[in-house]
Image (cartoon, rainbow, N blue to C red; front, side, top):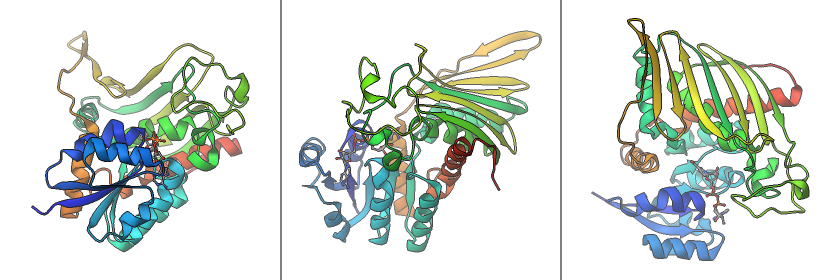
Length: 352
Ligand SMILES: NC(=O)c1ccc[n+]([C@@H]2O[C@H](COP(=O)([O-])OP(=O)(O)OC[C@H]3O[C@@H](n4cnc5c(N)ncnc54)[C@H](O)[C@@H]3O)[C@@H](O)[C@H]2O)c1
């Protein structure tokens, strides 16, 4: 089989923790370019994962006719520009989540992919998690009965990333804990249930990080803080969504004055319920023949990033629309916009 040559743009955390290793051992695939604005990162990726070339300007990779596909693994604010440049150069694109900083730019990206007849997949890795696949089967197979409510929580005690930097700038990241963590949870719920959103009511809060010098923490991922930087995003969010099916409520916090961390989704049905421990296993609760039961299925959990990368390369080879195609993910971007709009207007937002 002909080798697919790719360029990997952005050699930071997600590249090194998730994508470079599986891509480097995929048969019939060559990482032709490792690209990063910070040259040492591109060189390190080249050395460790055998990329042919290490460069700092992604445009050079886009000009290379041999490159068929690119991975956009850069911060949120650059997803739109790099992806559009790549699509317009005739490349297929895998772009990490979130699609970009808002819904209208996300739609433009989807339209450009359609016009250019290229695959554009988004990094919704959890859709490839084994537990998520099993829960989708349980829900669709009716094992929960009528699914009437879903609650999710993504809360941490003191976990604002890189306070004052790109993560806490609305302009650069599009938002805070909602777009960074919440997107994974809400996207999963939409994927598993297939519901259509009707109304959204939410509040966002920027409380603990807004005075950067006063924020107290033990460690800071994506840090250190930028004391004279900006924090104009949500460090907490809470909301309620009505849909064509189950209602959804959620609470999320990068930081809160409660020393309690939790990451789960509860699916409430009238015959059974499921708690998904985010990124891990799940428990199924039901009552049968007058006996309460809780079952913890035991199964292997393959690497979801590897699975999403394999599916992307298959999609490129065969022109397939997979579960992470942008058209399948746009609804999550629309939901995020509606949540932020509801919080800004302090009103319920109706969709569609
Ligand atoms: N799917 C997931 O579970 C998951 C997890 C973490 C991060 N992400 C997403 O991945 C993206 C990257 O996050 P990260 O944590 O790896 O960030 P990071 O800052 O660690 O890495 C990003 C890299 O991109 C480089 N870069 C920025 N602009 C560039 C450009 N124009 N050309 C070339 N290189 C450029 C930076 O120098 C940096 O090395 C974000 O959008 C984030 O939301 C997804």
